[in-house]
Each structure stands twice: as C-alpha cells, then as structure tokens.
Image 1 (cartoon, rainbow, N blue to C red):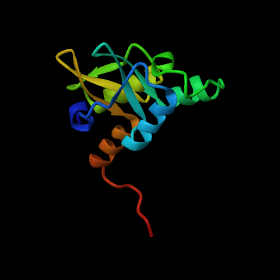
Image 2: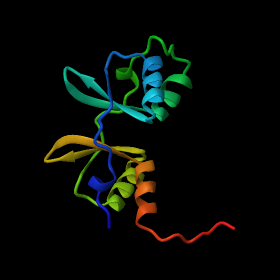
Image 3: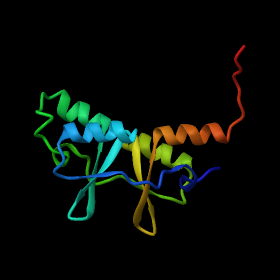
Image 4: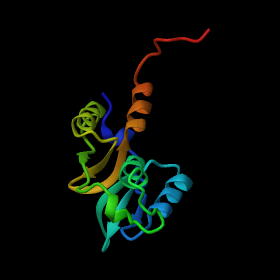
Amino acid sequence: MSTVVNAMLRDIKKVPHTTTIKKVAAKMKSDKVGSLFVEKKKELVGIVTETDIVRKAVATGANLGKVTAEKIMSSPIATIDAGRTVHDASDMMGDLGVRHLGVTEYGKLVGIISVRDLLVAAQRFSEPKITQD
C-alpha cells in the first residue's frame, strides 16, 4: 500500500493572512491548485480552499475585494503524518469532511495531499478494470 509521502505535493503554496479573497482565488487559478495555506507572522495558521471561498464568501455575498483569507480560512490545519497510508488519508478526509490535509514529518508541515492526489495514487497502484471500446 502506498504511503502519503508518495502521493503528496511538497510545494507548499501560501498567502499572507491579509490577502483578499479575490487575490486568493486568482492565485489558486494561476497556481492551478484548489487550496492555499494561510501565513501569519511566518507561521502557517490555516488553509483556504475553493469550498471555503464558495461557502463562506461568495454564498454570503461578501465583498471579495475586502474580505481576507484569515476571515474564511479553516483552522487549525488538519494534518497527517507522511508515513501513513493513502487509505489512512482517505479515511481521515472522510471523517473530517475535508478534501485537503497538511502533511507532516516529525511534526513539521512539509506538504499537502488532496482528494485528487489520492485518486492519482489509486490509479497508479490498481489494475484497470474498465476498458474502452
């Protein structure tokens, strides 16, 4: 079974806590990611996801040019150790109702794993069962 370290992304994308939601969304688009960690005083204090933007800002009619990442971020960051299995990550995401987990090694945040990463990992380690004509 594959471990989280084999499926995660080590490139931690982040924004300052004062970044507006409009700029957060633009960065997600340009970086082609569905979440960004939020940094305050050089410490990662939360995560903003596409779901956070939709549910906590857009759906409430918030001014996307004024509301900041800190106001809608999810905190604390849900994390999993890099040595755990991708199955453990999937179970944790399901239990917590999240699509992204911070990945830690020796207690330090070193990456991120998403539902999409789990799907890619599952494809790598499974045999095709459906074929196309």
